[in-house]
Amino acid sequence: MAEPSPHQQRLEKQRDNLRLLNQVMRHDIRNDLQLVGAYAELLEEHVDEEGREYLRIIKESTESAANLTTAARDLAQVMLSPNGETEAVSLAGILNQQIEEIRSGYPEAVMSVDGSVPDLDVVGNDMLGSVFRNVLQNAIQHNDKTPPKVWVSATERDEYAEVRIADNGPGISDTQKAEIFGKGEKGLESSGAGIGLYLVQSLIDSYGGEVWVEDRKARDSSGDWLSTHDSEIDGAIFVIRLPIADKV
Image 1: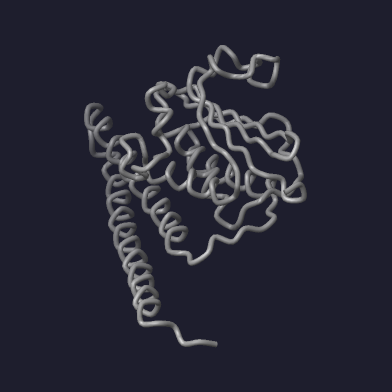
Image 2: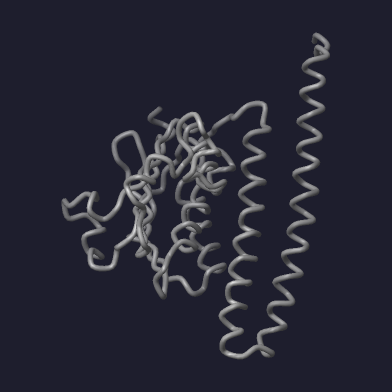
């Protein structure tokens, strides 16, 4: 086997340094966030009614920042990986796991699953859970209703599996829909892109799938599961389409 060229060695060293920097920074930031969260909990009994609102904002911002470090870790793993290999992974196993984790992490949210997730394998890898986690978190964190509600549906459509995640939040304007995933040349510099949704788009692209967002006015009106919740779904509907592994 030929020795790596000086240029390849330099790139590999840069990747190693970036991996280490990412790991150390996330570790230190998460430690600080855990400390802030712990002291916020201790303050619960020492603030008046007005102070509780400020304390709620501190807690939510701390949780959001912690989620951001997780998304940054996943995105760094994707960007620093020398090859984005895919494999057949269980849609039901990964999606159901993320739903349960989100339920545990956001007990104030109401999450409903329509029927059961199809028992089939889709094209993906061990990062597919990050796709569902980020979309589910987005549906709750950017929700202005009490309680925030999320509906999940998964169906098989020809050679694709289609996952729909709907919410009762404020929705997404048409002007934002073109930029929300950081599509186009701007990538993360896009005015609508956040790390989590940019990661979603990057991973779905690598799987040969599609992801887009629509609102209740643009949904399929042919009597599908969404129509039974028509009066409640005021927000966005994220659609994730993944190739079925044995049909590619």
